[in-house]
Image 1 (spheres, rainbow, N blue to C red):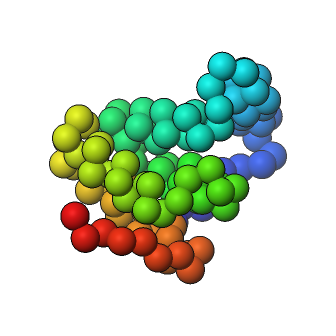
Image 2 (cartoon, rainbow, N blue to C red):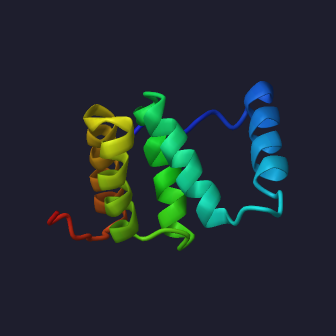
Length: 107
């Protein structure tokens, strides 16, 4: 997995505060829906390297399960393409292994 983002960079801290304090706190979407939307945007725009930073908290918080994320990867493949889904699948396997979680990837 990548190194953690800097926690001492003022611009980074201001940006993350805006995103996570303001945008994620809006009431019309739940956290689960925001997680799926964010993961999809990241994967579909070719930024798969940061997927683990979003998958891991989603799993740790119980917002999504490994089986749900595996199904999301299948769905992603048909709408965002095989390369995006391959990156997402790799990220999921890496994060799941790091957290000691298993999932079914039979289809």
